[in-house]
Image 1 (cartoon, rainbow, N blue to C red):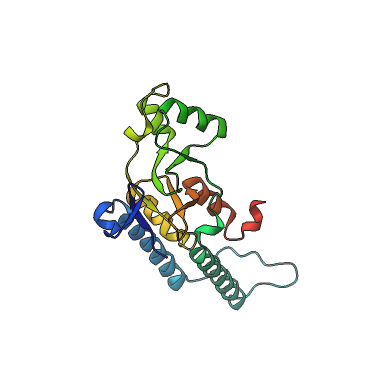
Image 2 (cartoon, one colour; image 1 turned 135 degrees about the vertical axis):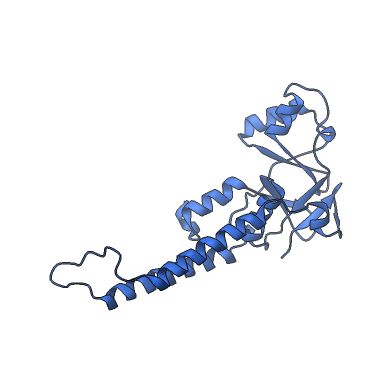
Length: 213
């Protein structure tokens, strides 16, 4: 499933790239491709075993080394493929904390502190996403300000669905220099949120999510 763009709480049909131009993902993907190419070349042109220590009583042969290398390579591909197929539903935080646009900056700041979170989804009465607000936004506005948060949050945002691939979310974090994405259902209601920290946790734990417990 694709990512969606919302403007003032309504899903719009304008292509995401027109409203959120790409920034840095091309260089990242190019770098990733370069590293993989170098790694592949290294495997193709390697002239011998790479410091494999034989066990007692049975020295390793070149065939053993090739078998081990192939097995490790296949396991790496399998793990990468598992990660690439994971969807947002596996890592999103739900239920998500929302806040109406009519509260003050000071109130939003106190709520973030009490919930120990760094982002709040601004939503209307029907739980449609209106915007996102972060601790950094509130600090910049002044944490004791009595101005309404509607004056400081962006009215356009990117949202995912539970079926969106995590890989797509990660790419958009890089492309658009954002730290979180709300998750919506088919009725355009906010049902969760994914932050960069969720992706980092996945990176550390791998695709086997039972390790998180």
